[in-house]
Amino acid sequence: MSDELYPSGPWMGFYNYRPGDRHRMDMDLTFANGSMTGEGNDDIGRFLIKGRYDKASGECYWTKSYIGAHQVAYRGFREGKGIWGTWEISLFGHGGFRIWPGSADEGQSRSEPVEQTQPVEPLVAPVAASGRLTPAARAQQNIVPLLVTLLIAAFVIAAPVARASSADWPQFRGPNCSGVALDARPPLRISPTNGVLWSVPVPWSPSSPCVSGGMIFLTTITDGQLQTRCYASDRGRLVWANSVGVEQLELFHNSEGSPAASTPAAEGGRVVSYFGSFGLVCYDSQGGELWRHPLPIARSAGSFGTGTSPVIAGNRVILSRDQDQGSSLFALDLATGKTIWETPRPEAHGSFGTPILWRNGGTDQVVTPGSVRLNGYDLKSGLERWSVHGVAGFACTTPVTGEGLLFFAAWSPGKSDSPRPSWESFLAEYDKNGDGEISLKEVPAAGRDFLRGLDVNRDGKITKDDYDQVKANDAKAENTLLAIQPNGLGDISKLHVAWKSTRGLPYVASPLLYKGKLYLLRDGGMLSCFDATTGRAFYLQERLEAADQYYASPVAADGRIYLASVPGRLTVIKAGGDKPETLHRADFGERVFATPALVGTRLYLRTKTKLYAFGK
Ligand SMILES: [Ca+2]
Ligand SMILES: [Ca+2]
Image (tube, rainbow, N blue to C red; front, side, top):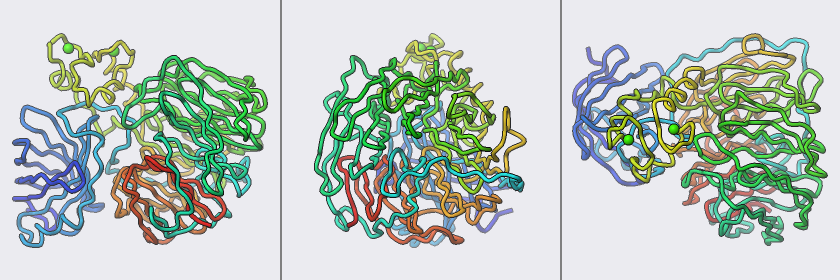
């Protein structure tokens, strides 16, 4: 039986991997009871289709298997005349697509993609591949019904530990990493040519600007030097730039990572920068070095490169330094750089998120994501107070707090919506010399940075042991959004979860809590909004016109939310409502990884080549 929205029979369309290009696909598809199957042809060759569709949500996902060659994962939404979405060849690349039934009007169908396609910037050109493990952002979650449990936190009123001055954006994502500037009134209609107070060229790195005492601080790498820079906020003058030298840089992903990916933290005339290859260094506002705290070179998960940023809590600097081995959380004295406490995290094998502070049941706590766990530690002593198990295999996001709860949302690959191939088929793909192992030399150069993430013991080759370890970690993980109640001790996975959801989960962009509502930004430009207290969804996976990847986290002020995508498209929406209402859009025409900073009447945005100041 054929369905109006999912008619079985001929379908056509195209995929692209660079904005504007199109590669035609012709398919014969069968839709029945939630499964889709079929076959087709495109410019690469003949393929088989196998997947699922969900009539209620419109979500579809399928695998396109080129016969005798690689597979491509497709995720899409049924909308208008067809299905649009993104494709991904695991570890190697991704792009956009649109398909429609052959029965749709030919003339309209042919013209439709031109206006409606939202191509996603590729990481690299697609190459035949299989296997997964990449913290680089990518799309798509599973089709699981929204699960909401209502439990109202009793007896407890929790408040954020610290609120920085509204004139500052002191660290990654501003006050307590929240992304919220309560009193700021940044401009709305900004673009590369509108509202620019000043802009200056800045050497590329993905770290975000922070703002303290009228100075803007950021990190970068230039000529191999790991640099902290200070700009005056009035006109963007470079006040100072200080470097630390290292003998060797940490391993990092060349297109998505950087040895200068951590955002500095600044407060009271001090700025602290962290580099995974070096450790921490603290300068005064004139650039005088106050102390340094060297650390062994970081061994980041998947050799992706460091992602975490330091934060300042009163007179302490907190750093969550998760690595593939030897992870720890520690507090340094902000005045001297000396260690106050260091707590090993033996169960953490690599996360990229930054810790936050949570005033929980009368104590100040540090909450940090890890692998398959989220932990809370006493800020004074560093002792672990509680843990939540069964979250994402590793986290790129940072939690947020408010409304008496703590919210954590993370997604990582390897679950049902993003399964890894079997070891046998993975081996068949890459093991050119047939010795039962995959040497990184057997992998095309473009894919080495991604595939290296599977070499768990870092011996330069991927064996079944490596692969089994990755899969074992996947098996323990659950991709979820959790609202956690305070006052828990020990394992609070069951008793202190106020509500949870599996929809709309972000990969890199952290959740945003603003005016009682929790926002999630999933790759593909899908925005969801929940009532923070009850978990009720105001909207789920509403598509922005910028249907892109998002590394920058959402930020909010003055009733608006600013969303900046990897290809550099900015969307400003009105907070609240039953749908995201777009107030403004702009295209910066170059990559944006950094989270914008909102201070007073200003918005600072770092793009691939520039630092912009917008506003008065
Ligand atoms: Ca081999
Ligand atoms: Ca290995």
